Amino acid sequence: MSLVENPSLEPQSKTRKIDTEIKETTSRNCQHWFVRNRICISCNTTLDNYEGRSFDYLYKVMHMSHEALVFTKRVISQTSWLEDKKLHLVLDLDHTLVHTIKASQLSESEKYLTEEVGSRKDLWRFNSGFPEESLIKLRPFVHQFLKECSEMFSMYVYTKGGCDYAQVVLELIDPEKIYFGNRVITRRESPGLKTLDLVLADERGVVIVDDKCSVWPHDKKNLLQIAKYKYFGDQSCSFSECKKKRDESEEKGPLDIVLRFLKDVHNEFFCDWSRKDLDSVDVRPLLKEISSRWKRKAEVVV
Image 1 (cartoon, rainbow, N blue to C red):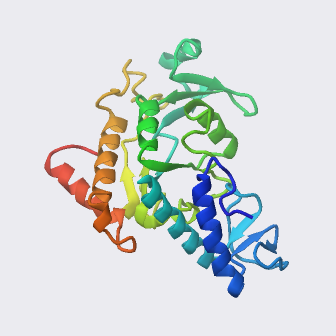
Image 2 (image 1 turned 120 degrees about the horizontal axis):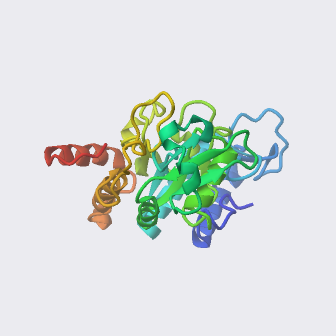
């Protein structure tokens, strides 16, 4: 079985390369690296007490050992660097790309928005399959942001929202699964704190964009914190962009600023690429260096 079996995840050339390396590594002395439905993919042994990490969101009933995970992350990232010149980008949804609110929580001054749904391309209503009607507001510049990021990064969504909610948002921002494929991690797969352990990419080549730093306690060096997007207020809140009858700027708003920062990161990571050692490159010190440089120039990232 192919480790990367979904064409929306990786090209076929990568699949062949990864498959070959996996078979050569595991066939000599099986360590039960990859187990699906309690059966080792390499030796067909049934394993009732296997303790590997689950990757159900990518491959149904798939588990990997720690050794398999380290190996797979390295191969996928190095293939992406060499063949596509792409890093990996992990994106939060709520308050990063969208803002969602229950209709019942709208303040009196915001209830007119329910009448504007359908006449605007950035405001949507959903209630099918959910206990309460809600509104979703897309952050300004989100479509262009995703388009340009996809040229530099393989992208993941990582949200503390539920699976059904994530699919509603993805229908609005990535209906054809061009940007994220099945690389969507939700509360179902990660009920606690967020972790790059669930992202199939070497941490040395991963950038996170999230409005919350506290949910990434072990991966702060990979994190680029973005200003929180709060379009709606609520009955107890005195501040929101909506109440001020305005929205973030398309051209100079937080997503545009973060995009320019990410372009700097990508350009410098791959600068003089032929001279770099794959085992020593690391985006994390680069994030720190570029952030310091931007602060000296008085450019604000968060």
